Length: 402
Picture 1 (cartoon, rainbow, N blue to C red):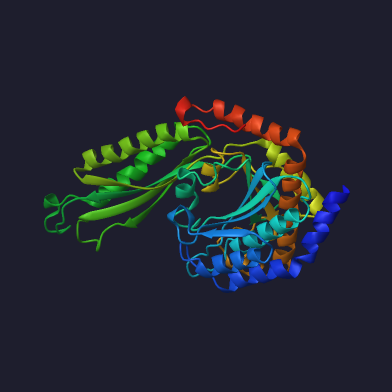
Picture 2: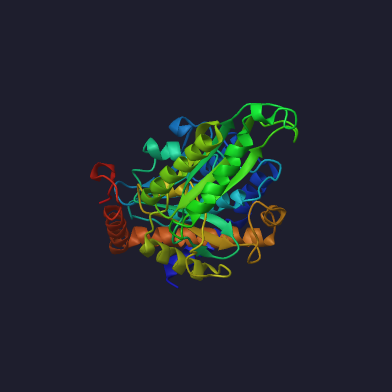
C-alpha cells in the first residue's frame, strides 16, 4: 500500500469515534424523507468543526445541503453523496445512517492530505431517497453538474458495485364502473374490478414479448367493498422496469394500451395516474474498478464482481450528468434483504461500525486516486462520454465532461 493511502486509512481510524457517533445519532433519531432536520444538523455541525463550508436548503429542499472543502483554486471536484432518511415504522432498515458517517470520514481524511494539490471535496446531502427522491429535483436544477465525479456508498450483503440499475416508471390505474347488487341486478352494474383483472391478464401476455431485463409487477390496492356489490371503483398499482429508458418508454406505451384495452373490453373508465420515474444507471466500469480496488485495500468483507440483478435508485439520474458509482459495503449476512428487521439491527452493530470504516477508506482512497492521477480521472471521463454518445437520445439532451 502506498504511504499516502496508509496515512489516509490511519486518519480514518482516528476518526472512528466521531463517525460512529454520527451514525448512532441518526439511527436513534429516525426521520422520514424531507423531515431529516436532526440528521442534517448533526452532519453539518460535525463538518463545520473540520472547516467545511455549509449551505443548507439547496435546490429548494429544506433538508438538502452541501458541505465544501476547497483546497486552492482549480483541480478536480469530487462529490460524495449521502442519504439519511428512514423508513416509516421500521426506522433505519436501509442503513442510511451508515452513509453519512462514511462520507464524513472520507471527506475529512482526504481534506487533510491534499497539501498543495488543488482540489475540492464536497459532501452533498440528498433527502427523501425512500419517498420523493431528492436527487431528481437536485439533478434537474444542476446541483451535480459542477462535479468531476460523484460517489456514494450503501450497505449490503456483499461488497460490490452495480453494473446496472433499472429505469422504472410507477403508475396507479383507477378503474370506474357502475355499482349494483351482484345477485339481484348484475346486468345493471359495470365491474371496475373486471377492468383491473383484465389489466393483470394483459400484463401477463405482455411479459412474454419483451426483453428479459424487463420487470412488470403490480398489486390491487382496492377491489370493491363486498362480494354482493358490483365494484364501482377498483385500483391497481404497477411498477415497470427496464435496463434503459429508451426501451422502457416503448414497454410503457404498450402497457398503457393494455390498460386502455381492458377498460374498453369491460365497459369501464380508467384514469392513469403517473408516479415516480427513475433512470437507469450509466455505467462507467473504470470508476467501478477503482472503487473495488480500494474496497479490497480497506479490508471490506465479501467482495464480489458487479451485481447483475438490481432494482432502481434515484442516484442513477446523477450518473447521466457526471461519472458516478456507488460502492456497496457488506455488513449483513449474504442473502439478507434490506427493509427488514435484520437490517435495522445490523445498522447499529459492530458489523455496521466496521462497514462505516471500510466505506470511508474505500471512498477516501478513490478520491485520492482521482485527485492525484489526472490520467485516471480523464479515463473515467472519456468512458462516461463514450457511454453518453451511445444512448439513443437527442444530442441536445446529452451532457459531457471535459
